[in-house]
Length: 181
Image 1 (cartoon, rainbow, N blue to C red):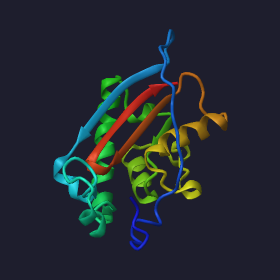
Image 2: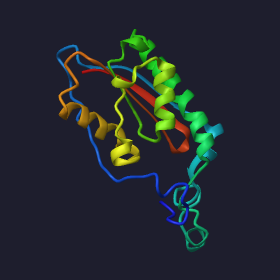
Image 3: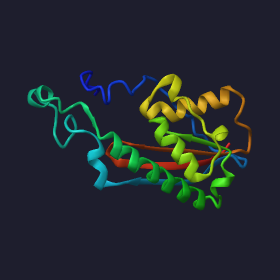
Image 4: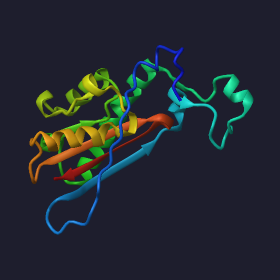
């Protein structure tokens, strides 16, 4: 989905995979709050125009490059921070928590220009924000599972801690899950 001729997008992405196993908990660990949204007014900011059910792939769509990712970077930046902040505050409220209760913020690793202002707006200190984009780039949907795995492997995530996983992506979908580890 990357157009190697479009330097605004092709250099941003890394490659990776991640998964998390969710199982029933008999203790206090688990999902405490969830907030999921989509904003159709921002669909144009990050999109792939063809290849789906709305405009199936064809010789013409491939020839015209409509299957490549299109992004309006400044618009994504302006939208992503308030989207993720909103979802995080909603999920925290659902859990009966406040931003000060977050032990670890694990945001989608899209861009440091998004991660830093988000953390600042939530009042989460830099040392409690997991960042790996500087090492693995934007691994898209794998970015949060990879960052979570790195935090666990480093021995930093402790039982009972509150973790906020927050993301946004194509189609202007965004959301947050609050976990007690």
